[in-house]
Length: 475
Picture 1 (cartoon, rainbow, N blue to C red):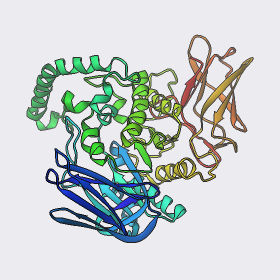
Picture 2: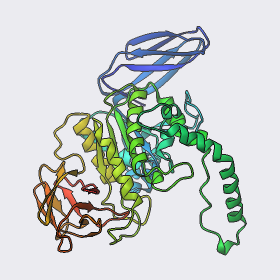
Picture 3: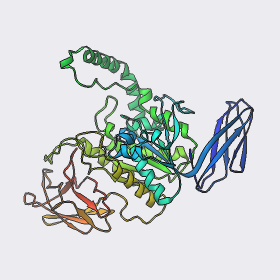
Picture 4: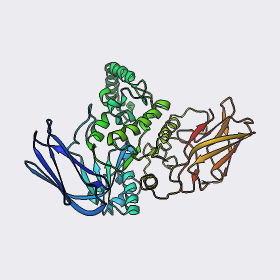
């Protein structure tokens, strides 16, 4: 495994009530006594990064030895299927797996079903693995490319806690107790109560739909069965309880987060688009920081990729665009960074396979925020403010200090509207960290959109290659 450098190393476990436990690592020893429930915890002094394999010894009525421990940087990689997407299925992944030979990168695969209350330990199928051909193919692809970049730049071991779980909503990653009396989540107690009350009837409806699907003639059956309804006790906190709770109180460097696809669609329990999803993203960051006991825990997240067919209808409602806008809300908190994935090439899939750019974008953000390296424009450019002058609108961006870059003849994806909110394509011209917009069909512009679609045609970046985040303003 890899443990976090520079902070006290907490070790915990279980024994008989009142049993004395001794823990030793690299010449340091700590002792504890198991309490009424049999649990115990102690801590060892902070250590510097080292790729020298160490051995941890835990002694009580029996002795356990854990070998081959390195000290370095430990990151949590969480979210849904795009974070869980394994290296062997990623672009260039098979070759990476074939040549895997970096014992300084380790990853911990978390497994196990959702739980209705916080769990103390992981399922037995969860395990640590080194980056070698036998195991590398099952590592989170984004996490690996992130870890490889950090390992090269920092020259210390990197550990990746692989928490990705496909199809999960953000509500499943927030502990159930955090929905009660939480100013960041007003009204959620009532929503959960309503969900619990309605579950039985909705489960019966799902069972009928599944039966109809299963018994339909082969040629008339949909490819996939209807989506199952998650029981309320698992829909709120179920993944946190089984994937995050067992980590505590482990010290970590930060969190990588890639989730949101499951919150785009309307769900039986809730519609988490717009304001709800924005509030939940803020609540998630605050809650994880509280649970890990690190007030400024770095939280680096990926804004949703383009998905589906490109559309030219600028006045169409876009659930993905609303979700991307909601994700941006987390940037109101310190030590958060957003990197956009809007420039993905394979848009007709929920899982773009080119994970290398995303992993490295996250790594550059980590170098800037966590490790205080000088990394210019490490965040995807986001809307700062707009200024209307006659028939022209100037839009200024943050994180484009060295200017903006157009991959093509001119910027695509901008639209202007007057007070009637009917949008038309805008002519765009780059000027430093800003874009000047005009449209012959909008003489008095009042609002602007950029990339406002599930799958927008956009081509604007900052000089370090970070794509500009879609946005709307002035409405």
